[in-house]
Length: 270
Image 1: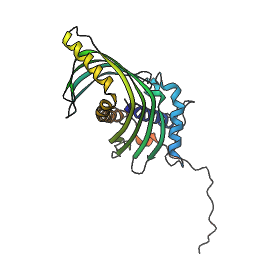
Image 2 (image 1 turned 90 degrees about the vertical axis):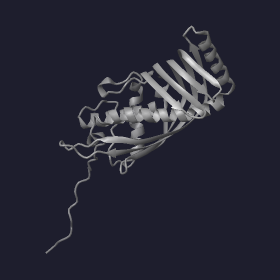
Image 3 (image 1 turned 45 degrees about the horizontal axis):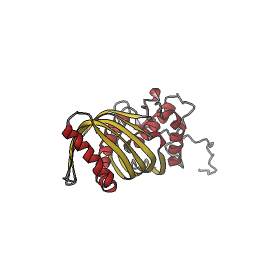
Image 4 (image 1 turned 135 degrees about the vertical axis):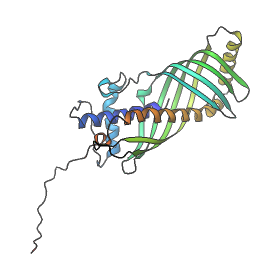
């Protein structure tokens, strides 16, 4: 879930700078200049200016609704010593994304790298699932049904790096996100698997998994966190690059124009 705030920040920055360069500057956009003395604060200000409109989305700027943020379908297929899971989730909806708080933002346009710290008070998650999993080699989780849960007090540190493509025949180059890493901590989370197969055995699996989680929340969260981080990383790479490929880098960050008059030289040469 944590990738959503990074994606929404990318979307808001692209939208702001594209609107400025196109001469269509909405009243709620605060543009950033490429050589600004305080680029990081300008980016935060741009986000805050867009935040009131982000909940419902901004179709003209190709920004999807964030409240809730919806993913029609996604899947997980991973095997480790602590978790073996194959699952498909549909109608995934996440509430609370737009409440993200940014801090320690650092964007470097010289080497196209950046980092940011994120915080969420709560994220509410609902989804339909089809799952065949084994937790810690002792707790089977099988069946299909509904999941409803809340993640509390989430802290995330994110780092990323991009590359700039060669200029095309129109003189435009494009950013491509080539690396992104998440390191997060979820203070607590509560949720329920509700099996809907009408299969007594699968219902028992769901109830057993719920009971095990209730009694071992911290340990299970520590096991699940690396999976969530990797899942978020792959989603951000895919979705962010779809967006980055549509807007030239030259339009994303505009050059500042000096307002100081040119000074005449007092030197005289013979």
